[in-house]
Image (cartoon, rainbow, N blue to C red; front, side, top):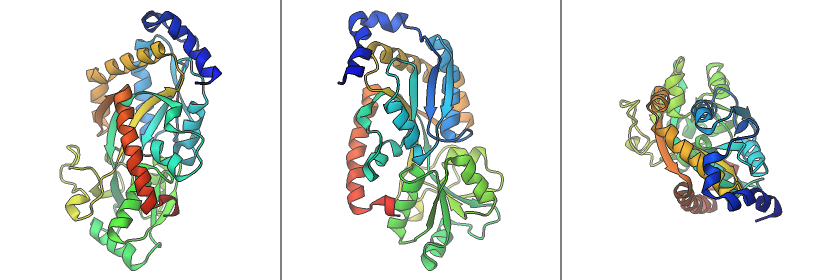
Length: 316
């Protein structure tokens, strides 16, 4: 633990559990989001902020810092104030894959976990006027004409991009990957015929489906929000991918303050109004608290490192 982290932790070591009950933020709390406003992660953060404010006793603002598939924002949180006034949203698998694929400005150990909030299966979509009416037709076209069909994602190492990488590995198809800064830009590019297909998450497409056609979802099973949409596995493509979105604080945040945010988050995800708001966006609440969440992520990290050895996705 460095000097900054020791100084940040000192009040909690002295005050212990009492600090968790009495602590109030001395400045607005920032939730740093690694993608543009209007995307799924941004909407999650703004909803969470609204429910967190009365529970934490201070204003909560969302700050968008898009870039590099979420790395810009995560790096800012890793270097940020460890005093309870800075949180960051996380996206799986980017939280793990970015440090694997390149010399990143953060690593998992730079964060203290609050918890995962929601899960949103990946999906493959095209425009409503597209000639491709099934995932099989799209895959076959990418086999016949490799790297000519533009496929959009929010950046290398994101869940949308890893979905593409794994789908290509399974099928032998080759798309032309095009990176954007967030979901709204991808949707606009699809409707503007700049790209042909995308890996936008199921919840986002269902909530913004005008002009789009879903071909398949990438969950382990069909989503209750799209029961008629087949999974990739059902179509013979053994790929499962979803966006898991959660919250972290900088490592070194005093334990009592971290506990305060974990308790507040536990309360938020049990709030029926919060659950209804999440489900209205076709998302599933999937709360994994604190260290249990990070214990699973460390196992996932080992699997992604093994995948990198066989399929280095930064090149695809």
